Image 1 (cartoon, rainbow, N blue to C red):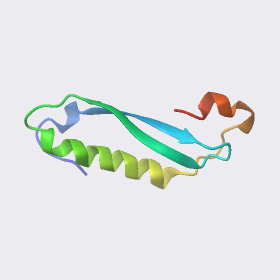
Image 2 (image 1 turned 60 degrees about the horizontal axis):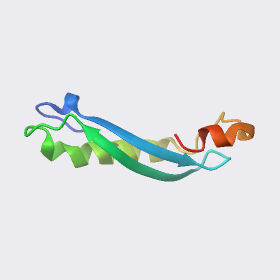
Image 3 (image 1 turned 90 degrees about the vertical axis):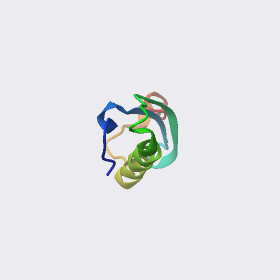
Length: 74
């Protein structure tokens, strides 16, 4: 878990692509904001924690395959 000065300022946007059955096919880090000299060493760790959490949560259930085009890319 990332910790240290200003880590709470970091916001990371990611794109997640899912199959019709809710399986994860891709995670792409799009943008990290809130970087300061104090939290810069934590940015990669934060990204890795987010990626790991999403992978552990997959496959995602309760997603209606009829609406796959709407939630395929989150």
